[in-house]
Image (cartoon, rainbow, N blue to C red; front, side, top):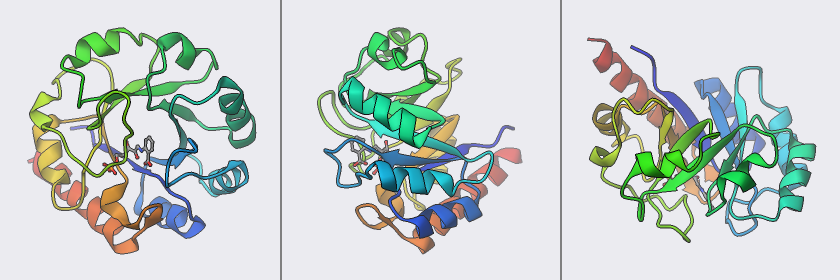
Length: 212
Ligand SMILES: O=C(O)c1ccccc1NCC(=O)[C@H](O)[C@H](O)COP(=O)(O)O
């Protein structure tokens, strides 16, 4: 059984990046849309990105941002992946020549397959609970039974995950990866060392169950 990958999102502090890497995350998310309470600027993001060891990916989140800003982010932060969280078209996402994830607003999308077909170049899809026009990172979950099985393209499950529900979420949806922000926080943008650790322990327990 392939293990479920994990991304911790909305990190703003060096100590949280170090703790996340020690816990074995596959990726961290840096929120670089100014509308977010977890926003990190170019200098902060470049400094956090420089702390990552090999094989831990830096993902930069954007939300209907100006192309000039996206180009500046790419040039200064060198993210491994972009994550577009708004209503960006496939053409707008692909224009930067970078691998990208597209967020699917499960609050308004009924058919994930039809949505994914509009982004043929996306490296994967992050299913979050917001509706189109809204933001992610709300800490709210959606019905995991709505996640398609054997989808054929990587699906990242997000929205309201925490140590108490991630095992059930993985059992139900069998995603390629899980993505969490609010559920590992002490306050917006400030991660909690104990919540991060408990989240990884619950995820590991879910993996052990699947192996039996
Ligand atoms: O986190 C934000 O503030 C944010 C702002 C604008 C667009 C997206 C944003 N976050 C997205 C995410 O952090 C993830 O999708 C996340 O895993 C889901 O958030 P949560 O429900 O808080 O775990």
